[in-house]
Image 1 (cartoon, one colour):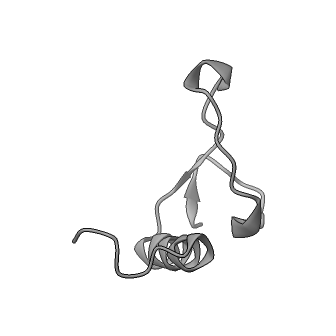
Image 2: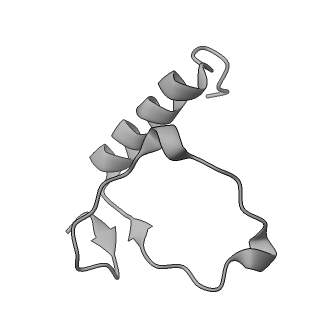
Length: 57
């Protein structure tokens, strides 16, 4: 299992990232906990948003 508290499989669509006001969020559905999956998601977001080389280490 790659996500804490989430039994179903799913797809992360990086190209559909959007902002949401914290007051609109009712509850957290799940949390990605697998380090390799987190790294893949971060790399995909950096590439999609065009911020390569701009992230602080």
